[in-house]
Image: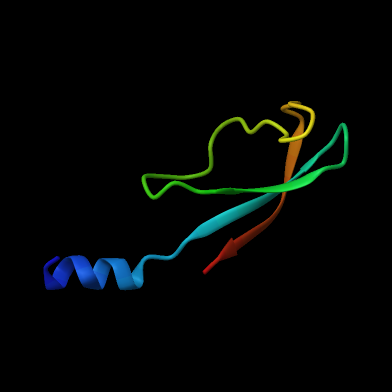
Length: 60
């Protein structure tokens, strides 16, 4: 790994988004891929509904 790759890795920030399902009330998180933003559709991990709302975003 060269120096530039090490710097990029050290400065990389992981981003997660917390979601709340509007049907069952489950709160779950997803990681934002390095390649881009939040996915267009997110399905609830419990019931599979796509009626979810973003409630929090964390960086770290």
